[in-house]
Length: 462
Image 1 (cartoon, one colour):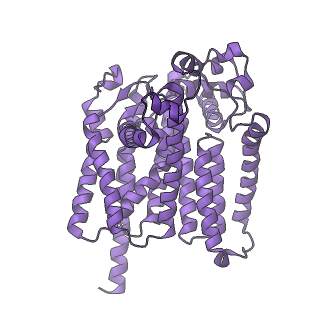
Image 2 (image 1 turned 45 degrees about the vertical axis):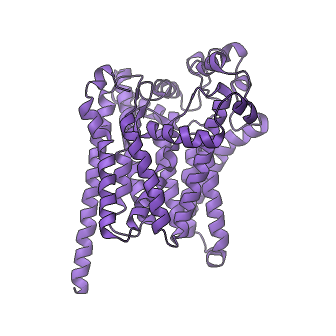
Image 3 (image 1 turned 120 degrees about the vertical axis):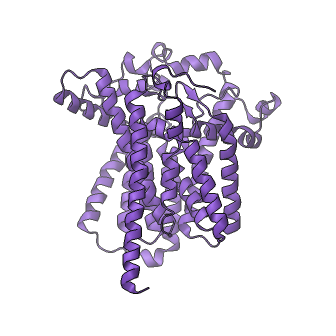
């Protein structure tokens, strides 16, 4: 084949891949928009609270004060990340200018559709991230397909929840970070990574551990490649603009987290730091603690003596399955747990680990950094969950698969990378086919078509 024919073939292949990507995005958009337009209120996790906060922020261009309407939800405005609700407030203002008679349902639908846009952006950055991790054609489409067919991700995308914005910011930041590791422009991509991480921290405090582990990975890379990186060249106009934006974002984060650490000695203040005891008593989280809490956090020894599992047993026998169930099922104020299929997801990830052990041969730093970030962030989520269990006597409060979504793009990127490394073509095609079938069967299309009545009655099998 001549060079011209090869170039034409590669061009046609790239066009075909873009068509497939567009089809995946379109299918996801249809499913998530259907959820957004038809799902009853009070189903998506914390949607009521996010909507109320958004309307409160719509009343001012600044940061509104706490009020009974907000602190009775158990959330607080003062000295907390604000960006998601502030943006929603501006969207509500715009809708009210265009349509002064817009009802609360109209506003809710607009904010839900905004969430769909955030998640479409997350899927696109998932594709870009996968292209950096996987250097083979077509395979970067696999992580996008997996994410688009992750049921909780689609469900959450059709609702008002700050996780949708946070997921977009996290995967965008990780994309630029991985570009640093694959030898792309060090300054531009480092600045872009930091910008997205700092914006994410202004949206939700759970981005902080991701920012920490990604910084450690960046620092190790920089030290290892210091001779090639330094001295840094003069900043371009675009890089200078990114640096200025970053400085403002650092200031914004210091105004929240720096202030909290100095004044309250914590990343976020407690209710007692902000409100009166009688006001804190109205919080549903305080009520839950009063009703179900043990009064103190058990030590590990006390927990084991009481018959509760140690961390390793809890991780292997409960936590992994619970996270999969609440990722490939639905956990909101109503639930849908397709328990019959979760076993196949467990086998799937076990198979991926075995394939990685068999076929990974001298993977690049970008791959190992992804492993490190995934393990580090997952460990933080696990320890947070286990500490909650020690406080509530293992009643399994506040365990959410969506808390792992900031790193799910990296997870799926490694799944795609692993399958692309399989040398035996027959084995590779069989593994790929089983993967596509599993995620398609467990994805939103089957859920929406089989349980169409859910959107009027929300009667779901457990």
